[in-house]
Image 1: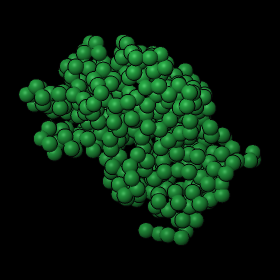
Image 2 (image 1 turned 90 degrees about the vertical axis):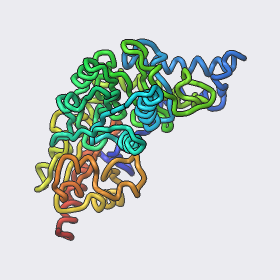
Image 3 (image 1 turned 90 degrees about the horizontal axis):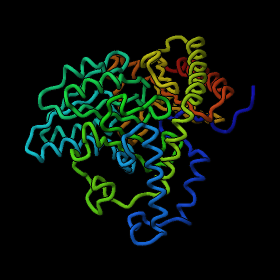
Image 4 (image 1 turned 60 degrees about the vertical axis):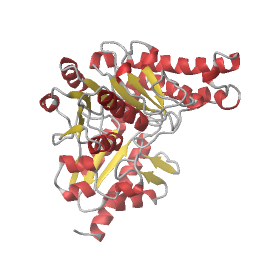
Length: 401
């Protein structure tokens, strides 16, 4: 077998390394072209930073087929983008003296679920739609949940734990017919799904840099400006200098924005290549685990899922025990027992995603998420499969429920 390095990283849903091409585009804006783009009307040095920001905006806009680059609003990440979408729309409706009912899926990322809970506690009416056994939010359940006072539907493009993908075009069509805004958290889908916002009927879309081989601490919210005009229907959640068209105040993070623009462009242009590579590795890993181990269950849909995602329950053990043992192996094998975008204390309970698709407690507490990436090799997958099988068998022998 080909030698592997000191670490086999299989947690690409949590974060990714910065692509060298992305880093090289970012680098000049740390120490050479460090002007503040907000001063671009005052002097040329700042205007260089402004052009870099607008260049990134255009790259992202082209990648998602927006009407115009200005539809892209830069944020500190997808969590902020999700908050801006939900709070911004609902609070705007409230400010105009109208009732605001909104809808989300029950398997959404905590950036959506936590925001929805706070809005609900503040008096806004919230409907949370249950998924089917594969974690899919069915379009017909969205249709049934819409009321006269519904202002927003939010359904993630692809689940960050089990990889199940949503029927975005069908949900977008329903939202458009009902004159309801449609938001999607597309963090995990960029680079693995076509995200044409016109074709899919998306009005608001959140993305993140560090999930697509870009920098941490930067993201964006797509805000439709035409058919319908959404920008005027969002209440800013940060006040200050009025950057980003008065929607999101704060000095722009120029290096990271440049990196985000490049990362999105690469993710979209290399989508076919990355998808084929990821699917080949993921399927090889699942084939090995399914063939060599008894009592393993695939979580999520078998085909309607991200090509780089594999979520497996190893019945009879705990996921925390397996993740720890794999991380202590030499070479270290990095996997996850749940979503990474929360503190360790918030992850002490079993996954809310798994709780929504199965009542089997053994299945829920033994689920492991594997996220393959463009830097992984077949040699790594083969080696990891051997170690995983060995550790699962050892843990099953040591513990019994």
